[in-house]
Image 1 (spheres, rainbow, N blue to C red):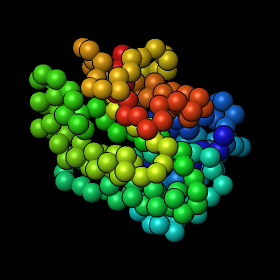
Image 2: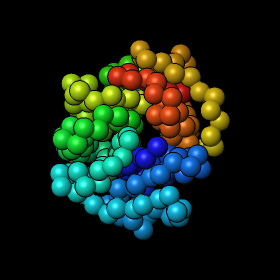
Image 3: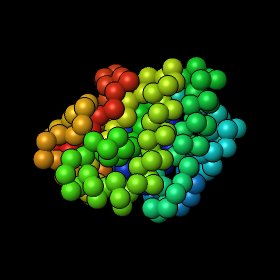
Image 4: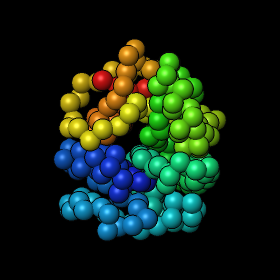
Length: 204
C-alpha cells in the first residue's frame, strides 16, 4: 500500500513509518520539521509542510491508498489545531476520492475512562482531549472509511501485537500501551480493512 502519514516525526508516527516500511509499503511522511525524522529507506518520501495548508495537503495525498494521522498538540493549553488539520485532510481526501483514513486520538475523548484515572485525564488533559474529540466528530460525520485509535497511556515499549481492544469504553483495568503497538494496530487495520467506522480503545 501507499500511505501518507501526518505527524510522522512524532514517536507514534515514526513507529508506524518504520513498521510500514518493514512490511514493504511505500510511505510519504508529511512533517513540519524533517530533521526530526531520522528514518532512511528507498520506499520513504519526506514532504515538509503545514498540515493546515489545503494546497500542501492535497498535493501530499495524491496517489496514495490511505491516510494516517498521528498528529498531536503542543502542550496542554487550549487548541484547535487537530480539528483544523483534520478538516483540511478530510476536504483534500474528498476532493481526490480517497476514502481510507486512520486517526490516532486518545482514550478519554468521550469521558469513557472510569474512576480516578478518568477524572485525572479529564482535568489534566481536557484541552487535548477536546481537540481530539472535535477532530473525531468531523471524521464520524464524513463519508470516509475512518478508524480511530483511542490508546490508554502511551509508553515507549516494543511491539508485542498482544493488546486488548474495546469499541465501547476501554478494556477493563486498562492502563497503558506502547506507541509501537498503537502503530501495529493502525497498520493491521489498514492491511486487513477492519474496524471501518469504529473508534477502538487500546490497552494491555
